[in-house]
Image (cartoon, rainbow, N blue to C red; front, side, top):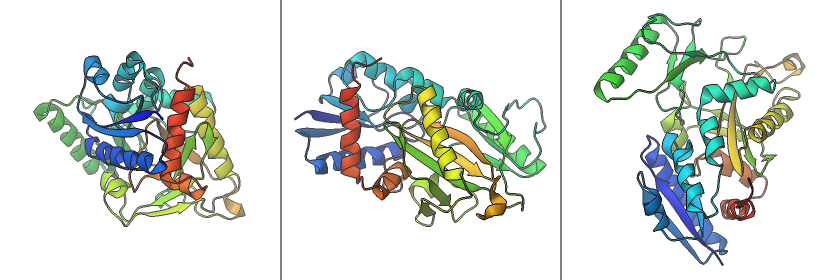
Length: 322
């Protein structure tokens, strides 16, 4: 039986979530009983030599963020030579770039909100309010602002300017419309996970607060989740197919999760033209006890041990594939 090296931590802002994901992945792999050993290793920004010294026949990275999910770690994994779970470096870089992903989605006919690059020198918002400002190369709503007025905009820009000046952060930010229903209510938040090119059930997310942010995703227990929710005709099948098509086009392998906003007010026949707006796709989504891909997998009879073992099987299968 092979041994598994689970990597958690990393230098990114999502380090704490990564540590939780790695904990639950290692626990699940041990519970599966299919591996001789499971090594749960906490790392920072390691080198190729550091990685080669770590034990394990197959590597399961559980890092989230620009370094761990967006290509640099994947470069090291490719050079290391062992099978590993998740996308190769080129696909990882593509998916971490939200604007590049939007161009790919639009080329496939997938509806996605307009986008502008934030330039603090402009002084005014390039789109009508409300808008969302977020980093181009981050996840888990890190650094995200919802601006509903010029005052919100000014405060968000001041915060970003202060971060750049005091913390040395130089994140590139994007601005896109905040999708709403015709009634003016917040749009419905939907997510679609895929495992090995097949879509999992859609999950609808209803946070208790206005924003489904970092705490709502990983620490609070008052967010409501509905697996396979009732949606307007055709929406479920459409966004599942779009997620699979987009992942295939971007050469994303093994797993991913795509996020959408639905602008419908109801689920009846009058909502047949409801529009689902694609936001982004994640190549290493969370694997904590709050996370959505494991939740959707459980719904179709794939508990966490079976899910994690299946991902290891894919890593072995695809080891020498281009």
